[in-house]
Length: 233
Image (cartoon, rainbow, N blue to C red; front, side, top):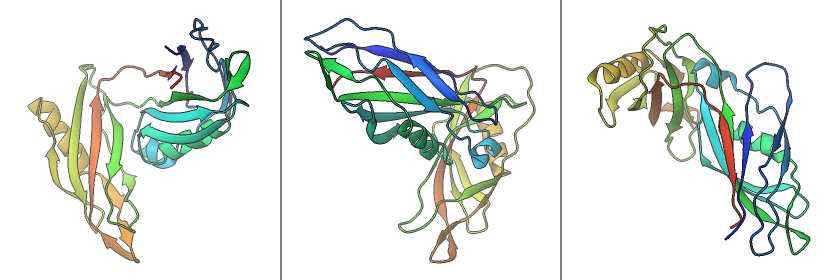
């Protein structure tokens, strides 16, 4: 069985660039495999203006290989957020450097998962947890240009509402439907919010096109932190 370690990071939402320093918990040795990459430095991932406008917050999880020189390679997003934050997370991890794992006293490549958190604070009980678009082949996705949220009410109940919709050629959402209805009040509130959103429509060969989408609205979720698991594969 391979070694195991945890890395905890916080992504501050200040505008100034900064670096991250995380220390791994030392894992016991298994089959001559030393503790996995124990040190990482990463520049602050960029919070896109579109994501900030849409109140998007959460974590982007990536799989990658730390080579025998401690350089991240083959970075792939396995749990996306959308609105440019996935690309921002990948760009951040390309800057990271690790102390490579060792086996029999020699550095070896290591496959790991890493999650980067994006967090902001807004005066609302709601935020966007993920945005997924399904544009036709060769088309661009819609871009959020207006996203209003109701003010905070003090209701901290945690509810997630997945809203399926189509962003029309005019940039307005239509055909809104809750994917898995749970609470009538929260479902209705989520639909009302998204109905008022506006987008720059997806484009294909210079013409606007309809684009299906799924927006995950989250109510009452407390502060988010980021953790990453390192497991040799």
